[in-house]
Image 1 (cartoon, rainbow, N blue to C red):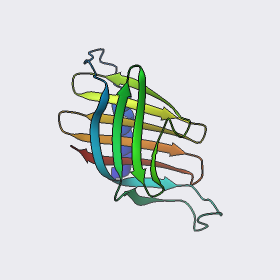
Image 2: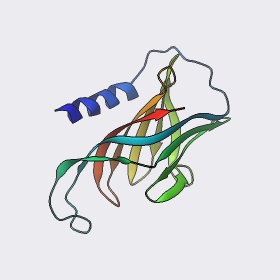
Image 3: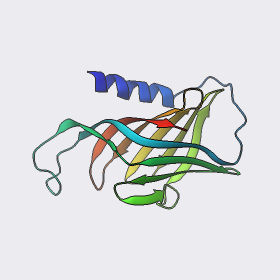
Length: 146
């Protein structure tokens, strides 16, 4: 049940509509490290024929870097597959909401939707992913930031 609360919390964080906004400067806004969480993996005979289930998941040696240049946003990351960024992958990256300490940014692609809520006061990021390829899953994660 704890994972369901995490997913619900991620959804609530992504829907912050308080109206209070902070000025966001250009450049690297925050750097975060490894992510830990849980994912629900859908049955996919190409990768895992054992069935569907919740599993511990994350990016053990991962990095998440939030970048803003003018009106353009990006999240760059290191994960199992190497270094990349959402814009480099062809995703549309946009700010969804912000207030005095929280900033939510989404990355939207035909194969996934990832939503990140950065907490600048407590230096953490809670994020979720919904992927249909190449490994279909829904996950919720948390990482500490500098």
